[in-house]
Image (cartoon, rainbow, N blue to C red):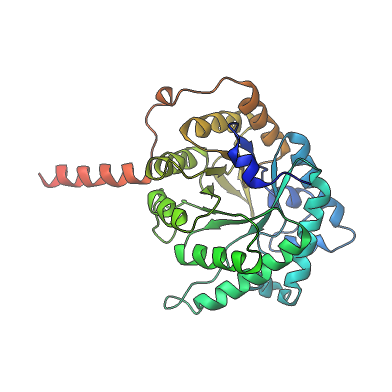
Length: 325
């Protein structure tokens, strides 16, 4: 039986999660704009997906995420694949499950719908819940150990995804992370402290931040969440540095050494589950796992000031008062 997420979270040691999936699949030939979830069922591509998972397991990841980030019927509809929601997610879970072995937890990745909720858009809450439940049902049937809602910017969508996950698989723990890529807030204006409070109320197994603008941003997220809800297990999955657009692709300059330093810093700030996101590879995860397991823990007092969204707002208000005065 594979490791259960709750067992990992109960331990005293940091939990190492995997890195980017899309980055690795694009290196294997996935074209920009094509749905990576379709590779889960293409005989000539399934081994590529499995190889990414295996690379992260061999690098030391204890939690790997399925190739299903865009596997909701909302995202799949863009490619006329929404009729295969269950199939594609089921296959994603099985590919990860085969690569994971007995000691690695498989988490079913559930990304944002890409749509706006009413009244700003046309997506209704119950419709969203049903769509996320359809995705979660395929992941659960394929053998995941947890459901992992990620890269969210809207708290209403997080609630819908968590409710859908629990409707489909009430026996599985749910993790939820948001992306704070707009000056320390989500695109919908949610701060890390607000997110931590909302996610704690949903009783998720763990919460945190992923993707975004690099390690420094995630450090601020973890610091703010830890201060707001110290009892909540926290997840840090930063991109490998700041993305830069080169041609039609985002290029990330964060080295394995930089990400190893980030891993130690977010651990000192209170993160329990530490991995990476866009632009990262098994080389990054290997360096991070080594740093977390072999280097001495950092003292939070030695980290210096950490830039958080709340700190930025406070400083902005002070600057405005000083200009007026």
